[in-house]
Length: 127
Image (cartoon, rainbow, N blue to C red):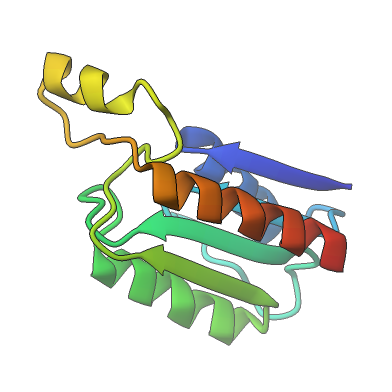
């Protein structure tokens, strides 16, 4: 069994992995990476795939770097893919219009959307 989460759901699936949920794999798409309860060594059972935008102000580079350190320290099997210049909500075709309407930094990116979905498929096929 695996789990996929987008945005808030992406943060939730990472928390499941950190807690040692009995999952083969979890994928976070433009989800927040920070946590109040970092993974402890030997607890993470799931393989983890994180797909994030390089221009996502909700997930800045220091958050990606901290996640990387956390996962290395925990001994987790994980991979982070950063799409350069890509903003938050890059998989949501309505994100650009909603971003403009509500003055938030969300933006659809068709290329990152397609590439990230291919990453998701490869990830789950490899488990």
